[in-house]
Image (tube, rainbow, N blue to C red; front, side, top):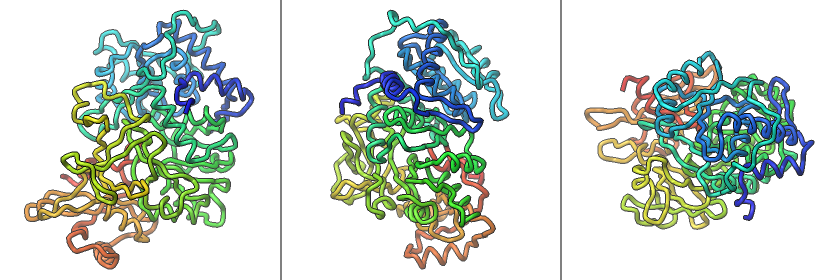
Length: 510
């Protein structure tokens, strides 16, 4: 547990000192860094940023793709003790401007143009509206670098518990919430993940989701803890699978949409292993259908899906391990990681017994320091310091956590509560279903009706009568059987893998 008390910078320095020649990053263009080269680049970037006025506690917001430069920048800012505000590349002016207005950074770092979007123009517009905000443009190969050493005398003493990171929630509700994290909350989370996944220096783990997601930072720390290799994937698509295969991927992420893509690719060429060195898949952000674990284990190899459960406010509170029984890997999100305390409560905050469904609440070393907007804390944390997740679930006598839905994701049909997730997990088992979301739609007679939104398997077409018959045959009661079926080409999801149900409702005109 002593490792929890290290800063991200000290872990970086220690890893590079211990294994300077160990390969660290490799991207699709062949650009690579050893851990020693990574440290050297971080030092040079930190020196250049310091020369531009960035120092301890300076707030820096940055929005870069999953590039080598992003990892160097994160390390450099950690070296200086700055407060980092990483933002997802998918965010546009409304969200980026809102976050910058809330956080009040001194510097906003963006690419010039990426993925056909002009980030520099957006950043300049935001800076023109906010006093004291400077803009720095960074593209591949253009990080500021300086050969003079960092001036240690002006840096604050390392403090693992100080606020060093601000991660904003995905904004599926009105506005993003800014959760404050320390190096300690992030490092302790990575320690827990490394332990249950048994990560080691021989592992090859592609970073397939945006590095600026809180999970990207946890993976960075995990690389530093173990010395394993990082494959940088700028934009995830089936085009990256040959790269992942050729480089010997052993651990692949990172959630339901990724697992669907792996399965589809494997099914197109079932005789050739997609990832022959695969040890396990890892996911989080949104609970998986249980059947997906068995499909992945059977068709992709390894132990299947090793799930974690967390949110921006508490990145991983519970996680399975690679040695857990198959039924637990399929049906649960694991058990509390060391030091984490989880309770299930009713609507009045009373603790429930094992097996009873209620809201999941958590406290412990991985939990954030609170929200930057202090007015949000009263509703988010109870008197004992537990964060109230808004997720529904149950915990058995042995501590296994099963997610059953969101409090706001209960469909109320004629006064009866219907779990959307229960129906989703069942429908995923239909052979024609590749992905599914169940939503409640307003209805004058019922209050809400149950609508299944389905992405079909390639070359398949699900009919409403088939869906109804399948649901009844598999044990759903009549009230739970969807009364409407909508087919979509793909399911809208955020960077954490959660289906954007509000967006689905907009598409359906609700």
